[in-house]
Length: 342
Ligand SMILES: [Ca+2]
Ligand SMILES: [Ca+2]
Image 1 (tube, rainbow, N blue to C red):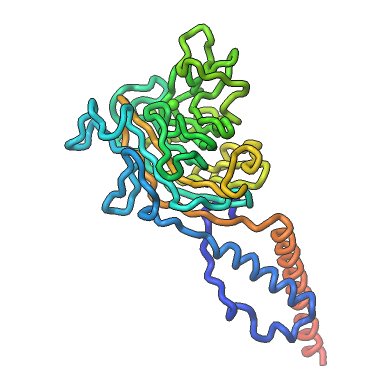
Image 2 (cartoon, protein in one colour; image 1 turned 90 degrees about the horizontal axis):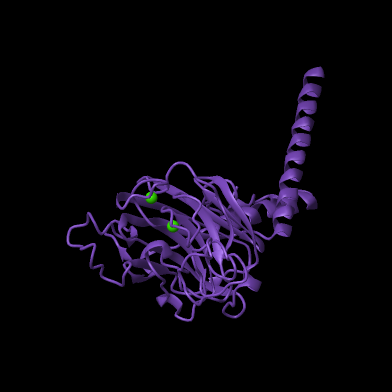
């Protein structure tokens, strides 16, 4: 249920357990308790109020409780594209005020909207850039962390982080973007993160013969764990899109509009340096420059996922309940037939 669609919120209370439960056989009691345990775990889906996030750079909370990571600098009155308010190129970030456990299984879900795409044309997908990233980080700046805008998407330069990039602008040889509408998962462990995908000849580039984008920065592995091909439709088409990211230690899986688009090997506990060995900040970054768009987060929630052993126990309970129900119906039917035969 958690892996394939929107998170469902259940209302579960002790009163929901049948009052006459204890009259039933022992196995039935365990199966029932297992089922309600599963429902209770699902009920702990926690919406994260956008107004509680710590905002950095161009991020602002709109009156309609939309988190705007970057505005479109070209079409918003009062904003001068040549003079963005924070840095150049512009970048925005927003973080949970406290670090949260990221070593146990969890799922995050958010809706995003990238609208009013104008400006410099990306041959791969038209105007509009540069995209939004979901970031897990324990940077030394904490909730003040922010990286470079434009193709840096607001996370280039954030240390000790993993970024899930929803990239809407194809950058050149330096970054190696496959197209102008794809998703990738990037990390350089505890070093600062980058949107570059390849490490070629010890440099972060796809073409070592050209001047490096980050002179003096060396690498030993590709920053991208994996990336998709061109997605459809365009993520910056102005419509609301739902993203879900599921972490099970060893694997990070990304869903877009309920479709599985990427699954990468990742162990956060060994990849990052975490607070108390367990905690990091969660949040979003975005960047823009010359190719403009509003980049918004509309809602955000986090759900602990039951441990596999618990989930298996609950599943066994559900199967047992189904078998019990089938047998019970059979007995009722037999009794009913016997009644008529008398
Ligand atoms: Ca675009
Ligand atoms: Ca890009």
